[in-house]
Length: 359
Ligand code: IMP
Ligand code: MG
Image (cartoon, rainbow, N blue to C red):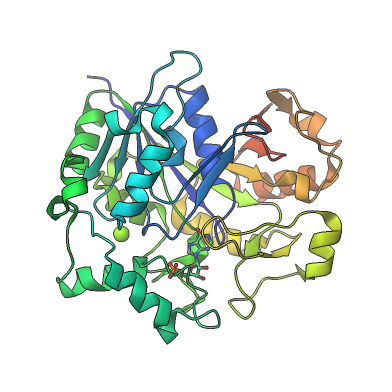
């Protein structure tokens, strides 16, 4: 019997690198059967700008599986793994907003998912541990929900009326799908250096690890069923609030605005702090722990400002990328230092502003 194929998408730094967009691109152009969201909960916002009018933006659903496959027109199965905290209001709202993509007909929530209750959101809105200066939390209730789970006092998805009809056993579905030769994409959230137990930056971290191993654990897929790991490397890395973690080479707010490269959090709307340098020594640690099989180099237009939307063909050679010196230098450094190819270059706001590196 033919084995399946699993791709895990993760971010090598602090998140907001475009996992949703790259994942959506992979699923749209390759033939994926199941797309599953891993990660902590609704704290992470994933988005992709389809065109001038339409942006797909979620905090709960896996954004990568919303679109149809461009060749077959197929809509993949969508799932949320049992390690992911679910906010029923957020989920129901997203399913409704994305009605035209028939989400309700193809989404399965693991029946054991922890449920974010109003008391969790309230606890985070008041708790000192969740202040701007301490962890920079998004206050989505995710961390407090995980605490209830650890205390074994929290609700599970199967106990909530709005969720019951969407519940299933995601681990079983995925492992069976793999045995049946299907393709699975695991959409991780946040970034390696927000990992609770592995990041040196505690307490400016989230409420679980953000690694490949953590993500396959979140969805219950066996370790030997991971085939590809796509690591996102953001050319212009960002971090949240002032005082929340070091950002080597950080530029001023004025410079961010002057260059027109401001970014605001999908969940919180806060202006991100930013640098124009990739911290390669940190990437080395993320590579060691997550073993990517390829990189996606994103936000290249923020460092090479001669890129403009639609300026590149669907495929590009390394030679042709020399016209974009900072991007070419980043690509060379990643490939030389880690022996891992850069497969995707993201160079603009739109979903279509991604090119595949060939030769
Ligand atoms: P929490 O998980 O919302 O409590 O946030 C803990 C830390 O992770 C804070 O520094 C957040 O800013 C950061 N964080 C959580 N989700 C994201 C994300 O999607 N992108 C970037 N940072 C995040
Ligand atoms: Mg977990």
